[in-house]
Image (tube, rainbow, N blue to C red; front, side):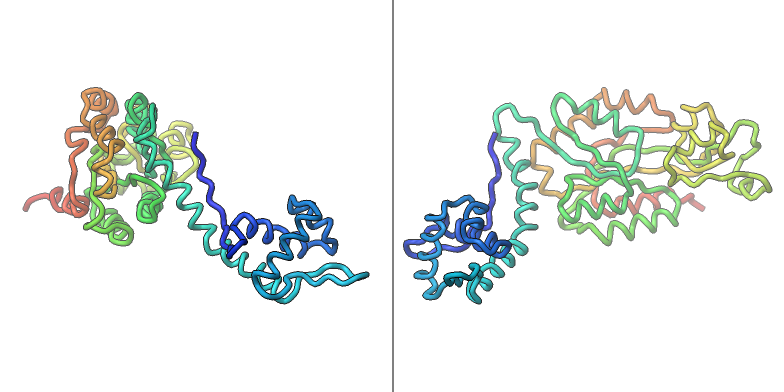
Length: 330
């Protein structure tokens, strides 16, 4: 397997190749920590004789010594030696982050052309029950890496180039749609990004059977314990275990735990991606999986879910016009 071996070699000159420049910088760095040239040479992986040689070549290259050495006194970096070492530190600081970014970008760029390699995608997304169905379906043709977190964080990661796809949902309720619109506008560019429809799902109140909770107004009754959805455990699990009377969640989760459910909104779940990525084999494999009967069958087993429009490509404003379409006609 190939390796990505960037380094910070920058020091070279006539009759002083980059390999000697690397050795010199290692020696100067070691000398900054040691008062003995012999000890510094050993630390830099050089023989004592080689260390003398590289220092002599460097003195001829710069026209002045980089190390001050006097009989009976410890070796120390000269003013020029200190400046050369400082320059090297500056180069490392400037290039270090860029090298790390390139190390992350190059393997996916080459992966699709390597013999026997599978296409790979990284998805940062808010939680959804159908994501695991998609990952299992993709196993034979695509390596789909999923990192679950907040929707805003996912969109930010896509904008920074840290993932290939960002998953987020938009409800037909105006306040939450406004939040989604703000996130889209903050991180995505309609000229560069597009949306892939994933699933539609039903959101509502998950309630303990017998709690007589039939709407949001019932949450204000004395003694009703409401759980926020942003917890370490799922809302449905918390209600099923008796730690809360109600909370917002998906119909599929309520059904799984045999809880009562009050429908409140429909949500569309989207994947955002760069338009340029649609030409790649990885995105094509994902779209094929979303269009497959097996995916539709898997989603159908999740109550309140619908995969009718899965894999449909839409512009960014589709996440906003969804709200308009869901407004009741007068």
